[in-house]
Length: 259
Image 1: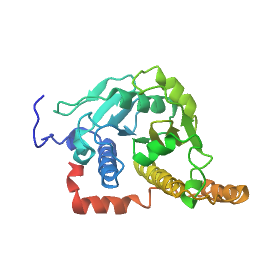
Image 2: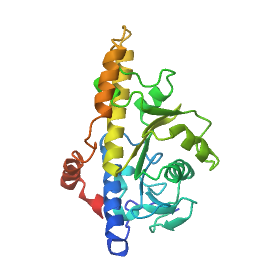
Image 3: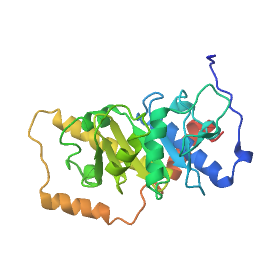
Image 4: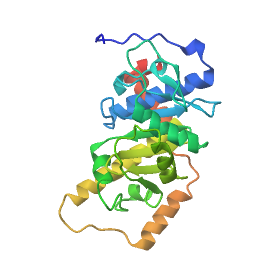
């Protein structure tokens, strides 16, 4: 494999539908934001978006590109059966674990338009705690009681793991992969990203509080139920309000994600 200091990937905007191009731009932005906010793991995790208008195709990063390098044109297009439908001129192909995890969810969840999976230190640490995510903070109550847990059986590279993962997640949009990391599902890329941002911060806060070696102040069951209920009944779709500002931030500092 030839190593170069720059990846020159031909733009494909004119050769895909407008809807697919917009999905590619949002997904490329999500990769850049994941890296910007300290949630990337070099090349070892993945964020995907279903190709608009399809039930069996999704976009995913080539296995070998840093999140800070991802552009709209660099994303692979993959079918749920594992066929690579579009691959840019790079040495990089499809990551087996990325395919297994994301195809499992898209196959089982027609409502899923985007999926984000991370290996942050905080997320991995909470995934290894028997207690999981606790309702220690207001942010945590946005997710508490709505998180699926999936037991670790080794890296998810075997397609037979797909049915087990889909059953573990069910109809929930937040998942802690035990001894592994975090996963969020959204009806849009912005929704999946903002959910991950919140889960990550809730995990960070829990770990810092637990590290203080002093008794934890956990709200009463009644207060937790009230707070969780307020998030449950919130009609605002998280991500939609925040996303334009995040794109403006990228356009000022990192505009080539749109290429």
